[in-house]
Image (cartoon, rainbow, N blue to C red; front, side, top):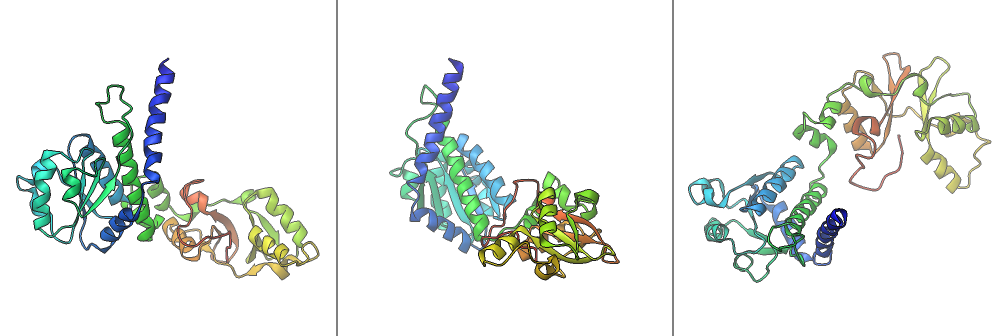
Length: 331
């Protein structure tokens, strides 16, 4: 019985979010464009549960490259309105759209010349009518059996705020290296603060092949390590080149003979690389700039001492490049 009730709550809230998808239209695009054009910050305001959600959305925006500030509507009317200027964008959150404290504030915001965006479940509300852009976050019903406690409605509001933040990440070309600046104490920040030598793969974990090897031998070694790449070295251990499974796919697509070829003839010579004492932050910058996922690591004599995979920096499944579609090219 209890589990059935919990499942029903989750279903109602999930349905509430899914219902927003079909209602996304040019008003959402206008909201994003307005924020992108603004020279100031996104000022978010709401009261009660909407205010709590507003604070979370403010935090998400700030951590992903969009300057935001939460303004309590009551405090705004008692002096804090001074932080708002015409360069800002005002984002008001009220499910009913009839929150007195917020609606009293909106005319003062408009007098400052600040564009007003409303996220509300009532498109005919006072707030909606006095806003430049209105985003519909209405849900069919609350998960609360009494229909009183904001549940599905606050979940929908939060999801719409996340949609806004994620779209802005793409529009602003926000990168993992930018994320590190805003999260120096998090797990990602800690990894990026390390040296490459602290997180690279070494020893038997490096997919090696000598320059004299056949392509058949190199592919077998690449398959054994499962990194999709083989580091090619001279007999002395110096870096000679690199070969990836992407290179192999392209050879097959072009109809080239595969197993008959010597590795030296098909590898990429002088690939991008890093030193063992390179900061992980700089290595990630190189990967981001060149759209690659693997770097051979060498010492002062160019001997290969390790290999660095993007997953070793960011954690498995934590990241994908956000610009053009990429493969595993490492050259």
